[in-house]
Length: 412
Image: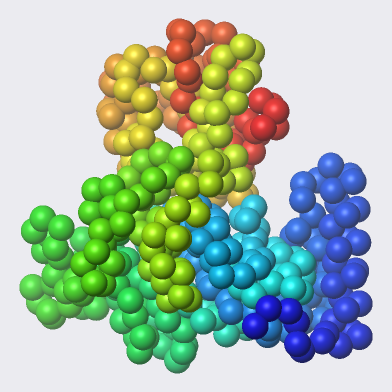
């Protein structure tokens, strides 16, 4: 039911007001959206505020290593066919940012919330979600993130008692292991391009057998479940075998997979696949991702890739050679300070592209490209790289803080 039928206590109202004030001060000082500091202030005043704000909502949580921001946006657009939605659309996905987002949703029916992988179980306890979408798990931020199998185990334990509907990717063994403890799971064949984190069985440690699109453990019998939803080319197959066309403005196979999962989630709340998919077409960009901007009289397409799996997906959607490619890598706190993941990325896929390297860790990336046998040029700034790039639209690929730097510089 839309509208908050459980009025907030005076303490909770004070916490919300103080959080919004702190966020406004942060924005005025030019320090971003203020959602994180606003949430921190609010939770300091009322530690139970997140749970209070979620009480009147049908909450859907979305978690993964890659694709959670985009999938959150697609689900939110689909569910708006059924009622007002509040969402952390800009990706502030830890408890403070989530709290700030929900504080603006007093009249919403649905809360569609992206959650950082490490916080999923805790947030799920607080907000009692109706559904949880689990997309993928792979290596990311090696200096501070748990090993993927440990993270899957943590999810498995944390979700074991959840009454939520789990909408999970049947093609990722780690996701299947995490979701299998739940009583109510809808399996989606969304695919898994990056397989290097899923060659050992999360159940027994045995070697996973992966014939074609199938997978199973020959030692303990853990295997791919039968999906009820599937991505098939440019269509979503629903549980009845009907095929619904996917028409997105977002590029790449990965986003078709995100749309398939989103359609499965929307259907659980009564939104038919056709309606859900038609609404998803309105999404052109997500927090700057996929935006095409004009800078120095050149067209630049901005692409975010934070880890090996993300870079692999990005390589599959860029325009073919001789399209120039600018790559920017930082290693600040939000990125993870360990850049050894660069050696897991198959940069030979960029052969034939004019390559330009920028960012705080441009020399780390340059060494990797040199070993890969690629021609490239190291530049001091995006301005220099754009000046040196041959004609045509430029693909710009960057990890998290490098992406934010680029958006500020090119005016997006």
